[in-house]
Length: 137
Image (cartoon, rainbow, N blue to C red):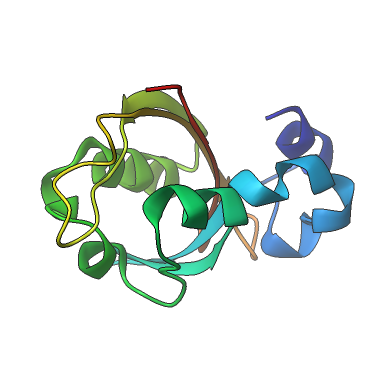
């Protein structure tokens, strides 16, 4: 979150154009980006870090979250992304890891996540920059 504050412009929200992966190489395996669509709310996975791919057992890049995760629309993860994108505020949470289709859970693991809004125009969140860390089972 310190990095997000550092790239934050004086007014408005930082945008994808402010985020440079070279600045946070140690975090890249845990980062994922989701494109934001409204009316209705949907999120498409633009990029997924290697640690997340390894934990999930597959790469869901390019999929909609509601395709990639069982019961996504009713999950706390969906609510957190909507809060982040809709209100333009960071959201931090600890929650169960999201299961993928065909799996009931991710070894009952908890995940800590931070969702950070990015807005190309400085006002309307169009990408959510997230970091997920899985807690030991």
